[in-house]
Length: 189
Image: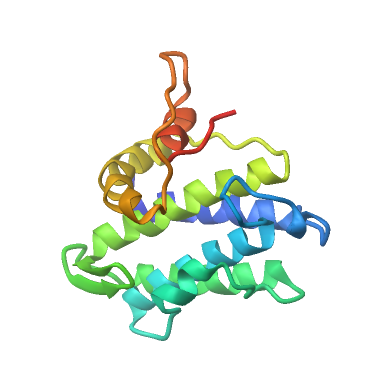
């Protein structure tokens, strides 16, 4: 599957989830310790902006802004999400050489790796958002495969900074989605 198609599907899921939110949902706790839905969604959208900036060379949040959870949603979270996702989609559609280096908030890396990371982030945080508002999310095979591949390198590298919790044990009956989120330190449903 084309990595851009996986990103598009992850982005659509995020927009679909944001569409269902009301103002009371924004104050609900999320699976991310210390963050409510508003701060989780702000971080998720800031991540999309940060990696769009790596692809298009425009402005994006600093690492500090990205991980602060500071509110960037204002009074219209859906409009903010759509604007960031549209920028991201335009930026990634211009990339023709996935090995070309881009500079992200995580440092310089091949464009394909950066695309994988933002897709992974959107998938994981869409799951977090869905759990917070009591909705189910199941990744399809392509999403789960990308998340397992990207997560296997990214999560261990970021665990020392406490950006991911320890892996949660799952048995052989776990779905691909449950395995992905458990590896990222989330308790699967």
